[in-house]
Length: 315
Image 1 (tube, rainbow, N blue to C red):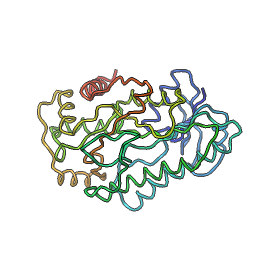
Image 2: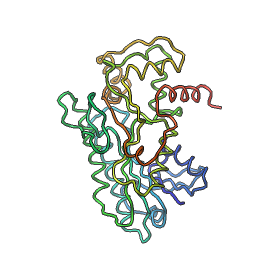
Image 3: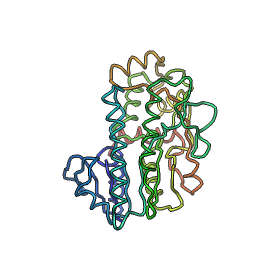
């Protein structure tokens, strides 16, 4: 198959392109900067039509991962870039597919599990999950993230594409030993700071990077899956249990807890937000499981052990 990955130059795109290329697929990454690599990279600006649209016409699948990182302080300028990078790139892809003489069979569009409400009482799945934004105890920055997620999906849903199946993948935090959230958490643990965060009751939804890659491939291969699909482990768990399992995997017996005010202060210093830590993301992948997808790492303790081993012994 020929698979086009807009925004595929980041961590997740690299993982996905590597896996697809190893299986013999033709991979084309759309990036703001062309660079040599094991697959073709075609320049685009994420907004305007150009030569890149020829890659869409005749390809088998599009996996759109484009969007500015949310690992930053939510200043007015950063908010604008976060929103526009998602909405405008999604519309650009939608227009290219709509104009193609031979459109792709499937458009897998990135979304986020952040779209769901902050809750402890029950899990959020694609059918009964609560879309967030109205929680009385949710900070304004959390509502911004939900507004972005909602606008992101709405941008994809603006397009009625009779010949292209559309999947909105609501991904939880992808745990990878390369960089990102897992490396930050492991660093805290190894410095003795890997205790309970906040009150420790908030659920952590996560997915091992290998399961994430396999799930994206599953979405391409299974035509019965369309619309929102959660990409998350079937076993989210409270933060205190999550951090405890990571400490055990890293061989660290103790971790200092961090209160909410400490997390807020630390987030300010490293120029990020506490939402990734304090929001209770209790998300489960009902549609993936019903379709027959089997997780290699359904439980966090085994996943944490695998990730620590890969990080400390990458060879």
